[in-house]
Image 1 (tube, rainbow, N blue to C red):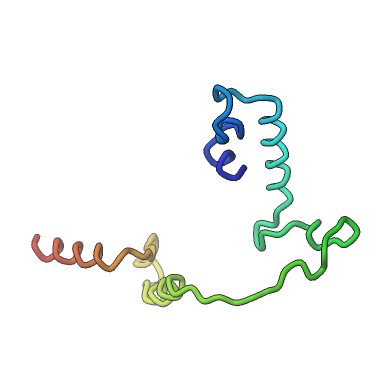
Image 2 (cartoon, one colour):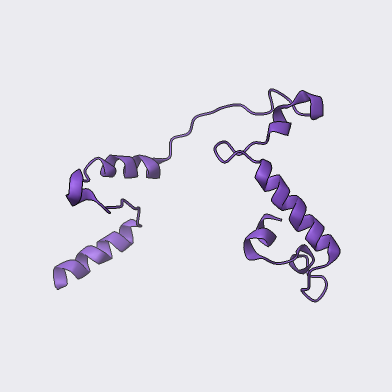
Length: 111
């Protein structure tokens, strides 16, 4: 349903059935998925029901873990070099593949 939602297509079409028009079942599935998405915490991605034992959830449904993303680390490190004030306004730090960076450097030095 996530792809159907993202692409705006009926579930029956995604499954290769029908002519691409929205059936009653497609609409019910889309509405149910939209309702489901509204229940998801935007920060942690869980739903209250997953924790609530009264409705079949489990207070131990998830465990918190840590993970280091090297890409995010590189962005944070480079962000520290962005100047404060007007000089740094609008400056964004992004990751690009090393090969693309090398090609851009060559092109920059040729002009």
